[in-house]
Amino acid sequence: MTKEKFVYELIENWLYLISQQCVLMENYTQKDRTATYHECCESLEKCLDYFDQVYKKVDFDLYSEEEIEAVLEFLIQQLRNKTIANMILEIETILCADIGDSDSKKDFMHRYLFLDKEEKQQGITKPALLRFIKELRLYEEGKKHGAQPDSGKN
Image (tube, rainbow, N blue to C red; front, side, top):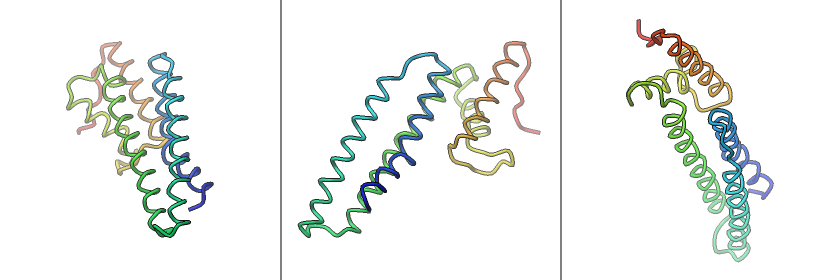
């Protein structure tokens, strides 16, 4: 894996998610997330230093290129998984704070964040987040005006 590909994979699979999370939470809570961006810069720098360190081991024939690539891919996946877990926790605790009990929050999130309109499983994507926020705003507006939210069960 080249350093350019590694950087691309970090951006595509990790930093993009953090950026979405920060923008979403900044817009919803009106609180600055500059510290999070600084932490990301520091983490990215550590990742690039790590890349250089592990590739030195290839140069000394301590590890093969395939072994190093597997380690780097694992690192990217771990960063992504941690970010998704943090995002889901923030969505549940901050954005869904007014949605009844824990089961109701999880049902709402599952229905509007993890399922598409045809009720097929989907990952956290920009369209999924947009749909979720629209449904959350509709729920909040309905609650403000005394309407009962649609449970999605017929």
